[in-house]
Image (cartoon, rainbow, N blue to C red; front, side, top):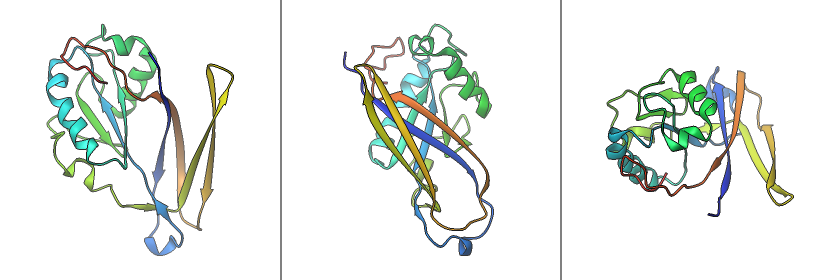
Length: 182
């Protein structure tokens, strides 16, 4: 099975200041973090709606996490238990799949995954910070990712943090919940 690895960068910003202070800007990427599980029946019925919604918004970046709660026997969770669980705990959504976090804001359990409003409010926004990724092959089985962050204009941004991860593009696996593509 060929694995495609995509570098994904999630940057959390605390926006402090007014738009008048932001002279040069670039389009901000929208990030949807999806908490799901291959043994979760509700996930199996709701996730296709999210996939369809994302397919009409190619500018939205999507990453899935497979926490060990409520189903610790999830095959995709077992590949990185601490990584999956830590991110879920970071947002306070541990043990409640399926859930989505849009641009760092956790959505409620009942949030419609098919709603065009799910991430629409975040689309089209601008930022004075530009982020570029360069991926280089290093040997037969390694990549090096260079992250360059450029401040495009004076601004009042502070208390920023960076969370950089590498994710596998698509996994084909016939899950117990009926999903085939993850």
